Image (cartoon, rainbow, N blue to C red; front, side, top):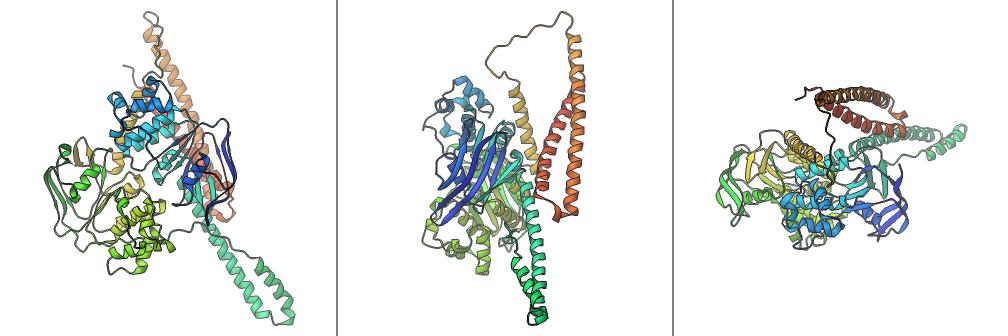
Length: 605
């Protein structure tokens, strides 16, 4: 594969803070990388250096002359009253019919092409941006947190698109499931370096865990050997007959070096104070109508929900998820009907953009101590702050100088410290990294109160939710199935939509097919079906054999790792990652051919 980007000797720092020191990486065509790393490690800075928005202090950034890079910006670039089709034509210099065809791939059709972008929900504005990107026909996509504030349907659509995109991609995201579905390679920006791994994010994290555990075992052996040598030196250093041996042992001790254990496992767990009262009714809605003034968003909302459950509020952007949260919280009056909370409940509400109003001269620690229960020790507060990426001197920062993401985390943390019966959380995982999302999810699972939350991070939702409230078609209902069922049926809808789109002509050119010979259509059809069936059977058998070979090699290597972990090389771990990706690809291909084969065997008619 030809290289599109090659970075070597990269150094970048801001004052005393060094982000990159002699970092290097190569991005080749057709490679899709999930870019991970703790907040502030330098992921967005790396993107800015590649796109020439920032300059490196030293090092080289080589871009291939064949590179066609398209960068998804978070900010909106449309004009105030610009329609979708006008925006696409203006920013891409493409003809109207071509803009409309590409927009159709993201289910932007008909009247929506003439709609003002400013009036679209966030998910549809993201679809417009993706359409503009694809009209540039790039061979490398760069996406910085593309899933923030996306509804699940648009997120799944983005996944479908990225899986079929024939080009390279660099995707920064804290949504593990999204990266697992779209990227077969991983880049980690951490500790002033850029680590490249030929496997998905879970395979990379497992590889890091194995390397860390192996380093710990080696360090333990080294420490045991050092202790043994030191005991000899202490016993015989004063004896003339053993002096030479003691000197030799001291030299051996000086040569023993332990390995640095990077990426130590997180030891901090978060404990959200649970309410005293449990059981009974949490929320009762009767004939509730929600909206703004004369604009009704949803109507006839009636249900009774018990305490102790955790409800994910799901639905497309613009359908009313945040409106529902604001209404049951009380900051937005209901248009009709009633909202009744259970007896003696304390409600905590976290909104998406409230952090913009946060200020004051208090430090982070002082702010958190103000909201924490008196029974909670300072160390417990510091532990929770550490879990939310406020470690060491960060807790001494004044709230007024924090970044938007930091303020968001402080607000969420201060809410969780309070002893609430009910938590209302609107997109709580935005601005959090993998580890923090995981810690928050575990804490909410242990929380004995009731939770209503909006989130499109599937790993988080799947781990936390015990029930689903679906917001759809001006109604809110308790969804009967599981979260996996919900995601499955959304995927089915997208598959059907894509199949429908694929049946349309690719270009606006009239095609004329030759008519079959008179009386010979049935015979020609049967001959074509038999030929297709034979080809599918042959391909299915070949793929099955190839899959078995890959699976056997994978099984043998994993057995080797389990039996002799100390003798396994990095090349072996790399090969395990490659095999995992190859098996997944081959299985998907085999299943697709199997489905085509089943359809081909069905009687015609």
